[in-house]
Amino acid sequence: MIVALAGGVGAAKLLLGLTQVVRPEQVAIICNTGDDIELFGLRICPDLDTVTYTLSGVVNPETGWGLKGDTFQCLDNLGNYGGETWFRLGDRDLATHLWRTHLLHQGFTLMQVTERMRSAFGVRSQLIPMTNEYTPTRILIDGGELHLQEYLVREQCRPRVRGLKYSHMEQARPTSGIEQLILTAEAVLICPSNPFISIGPILAVPGIMGFLHRTPAPVVAVSPIICGRALKGPAANMLQQLGHAVSARGVAEIYRNLVDVFVLDEQDANLAEEIEDLGMRVGVMDTVMNTTEEKVKLARRILELT
Ligand code: FO1
Image 1 (cartoon, protein in one colour):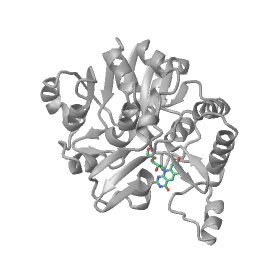
Image 2: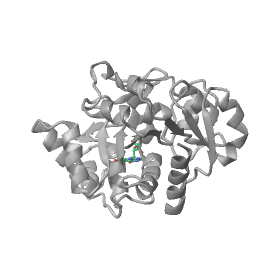
Image 3: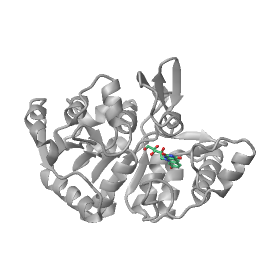
Image 4: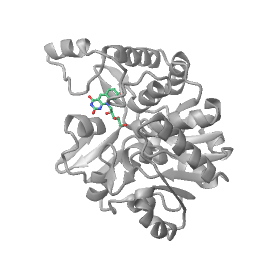
């Protein structure tokens, strides 16, 4: 098994490539749920949905999240009642959130719900939420805090980030099966996702860091930062505002003592030596994934490296 720790859009792209290089059944995806949010009484799990939609070929290719060709009539009508419409929930996407919430209310765990949805979408890889508990990530800003989605979407990442809080994490437990998967994996892949808001919550689930330290499998991380910039999202801003180097090196430092192999983009080849000095092997390759061929090529090269 190749075990992947995954956030949203960047991770989903690499996983799409990976599942074309090895059999999808050989991939187990441990997915971030720190970006989950409750809106209109519904539980929304953006990263689980992004991975599911991407691997089943129904994702909106323009945004990388939501469903291809979706419409927003329900949300517009909610707006007429005075409901908040900043989080764009599509009409067909809403069925996912309705169904998930319905099953959770019936007493199913998030893992069981995710399993049913994975199967309904024909996704053949294992897809596992990092925990069954609701542990939304909070962004600490001057004078208060925001839910991660309020920071990302409603506030468009404008507030200065002072810190992060992985709420209710003390009570959270890794979803059953995660320990066994990590300890018996052939390789653990940390996808090119934001280290603070996508991978950070997974590593913060009590126990998961210990499994990663104990596994004999190589732990490989792919940098989400190229030339000091994130291809998508606020990773570069967060590195800067939280006092880290705004580069792939800054990410490598966060993963120090955890990662055996760090994958850098070839445009950052000059950083290889200083990252090796942190005690990791470094792989240099083209990590930009626009086309399917690029996703497959990157996945293949990562596997060769491990
Ligand atoms: N991202 C946006 O930038 N704007 C949105 O309105 C938005 C809605 C949305 C609805 C469902 C969903 O699954 C994802 C959605 N996203 C939206 C993406 C999401 O905010 C982030 O990309 C992830 O949470 C970070 O991985």
